[in-house]
Image (cartoon, rainbow over the protein chains, first blue to last red):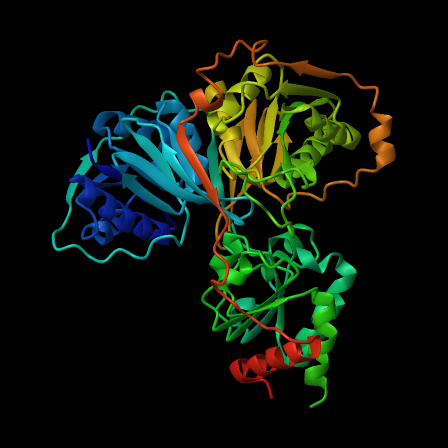
Length: 323
Length: 263
C-alpha cells in the first residue's frame, strides 16, 4: 500500500497544530506515491473535529469511546495496532510531541514496524525512504536513508511543515467500533493540571530579555535584570534556567512553556534548542548573545553578538543609562 | 521499591566546535568531555530520592565502552547500590531498538518495581529506548515525567505536555517511566564521593552473554541503511555585529531603541 496514515492529535476539544502540519506532509508524500491520506481520529464526541478535518484528507477513520476521550497510550495503542495491521499504510505519521513521543516507540515495538523519531523532512529517493533530523542539540544535521521495509512509523517535529491548504473534495468517513479492551495495562488518565498562578505574563511583553544556561549561576541573574530594567523589558528564560528553579516555570519560553512574539527578543546565553526556537522565532527582532558562534540560536536571530554575555551586558546597559 | 535506571554517557557539545568524522557518520569525540546524559542524571536522582523515602535498591545500567564506567561510578556516588556495564562491542551502529534490546536483556532478569530512563539523550535525540523496553516488558508506562510518586501498588506520574500544561496519570506497578529534565535538583557529585564507591564491583556483560545475535543489534539489526552527518552552513541567519565591544553594543542599542520603541 502507498497510503499515508496520520494520527490526529487533539486536546480539550481542539485539533493541535501538528495535525495540520502532518497532513501537509502526508499530502505531498501520498501524491508522490499515488496513495491516499487517511486520518485516524480517536476520541469521544468528536464530530466537530471530524468536520474540521473533512476537507484536509481523503479518508477519516473514527473510533469513539469514553476511554479515548482524553489521550491515553493504553487504549490508543490497542486501536492503532489494529488499524495499522488492517490497513497496512506505507507510512504512519505521529507528532514528535508529548503525545506522539509517548505513543510511537511502543507502537513500533508492538507492530514490529521500524520507527524514526523527530523528523524535520521526509523524502522518497530512488524508492528508499530518507529522513532529515538533527542530532547533538541541533548543532549537527543528520540525513538517514532507511533500509527497505513494507511499513514505517515516523514522528514529525512540530513546526517543520506549513499548514495544509484545503482540498477540493471532502473526505469519506468510516466509523469503526471500539475494540475489546481486554489487553489494557491499567494506565489511567486522571486529569490536566492548570499552570500555577503567574506573577507576569511574558507573552504580553513588548521586549523580553531572556536568559539561558550561559547565565551560569543564580547570582548572575541580577546583571540581566538590571539590563532588562534599563530598557523596560521583562525577564524570561529558556528551559535549563527554569529546570534549575532559578526563574519560575511561568517565565519559560518554548514548546513546554510559553510562545511569545515581542517586538524585541534578546537571547542571552541561550543555545537555541528547537523547543526554544518554536516559542520565540516569530518575534519581531531577535538579538542573540552567545559565546559559541555555532549555537543554533544564531540561525533564527536577526542580529548576533558572539561574545561572553557578561562582557556585553555592562557596556550595553550603560548605553541606556546615559539618556 | 526496587528501581532500575538506564543511563548513558554522551559528549558535552555546548560551546564545543564540532567536526564530522571523515566517513561522515559521526562527530569527532576525541576532544570532547564525556558526561552523563542530562535527562539520565535527573532519572538517577529521582530513583535515589524514592529509595531514600521508601527503602529498596537502585541499580544503574549502561551500554557503552569501558569509559562509560564513569557514569556508573557517578550514579553510585549519588546513591545507587549496584551497577551493570554492557560492553558496546557488537552494538556499534545500533539504532535505538538495538540499544533497547541490550538493556532489555539485563533488565528482564532483575526484580524491579520501576524502570526509569531519561526521556531522551542529547546526542542521538531518539527518545525511544525507555518506551521500547516498556512495551517489550509488557509494562504500563508514562513518558516525560516531571513528578513520580509511588503510592503502594501504583505510581502517580505528572507528564509534561505543551504550553505549560501537565497531565496526571496513574500506573499500576511494576511500571516504566521516562524522566524529563527539571523534575528535581540532582545532587552534586564530588570527587571524594566517587572515591568512596570505588570498591563497589561493577557487573560487566557482553552481547554474547545476553544471547543477542549480530542480526538483532549493531548495523545489521538497525533500520538505518546509511547515515550522513553535516554541519549547518555558515552565514545563514543572524547578521553578526562586529567591531570593538563599544561599537557592537552601540549597534545593538540602536536596534533595541528603534525596534523596541525604547526612548
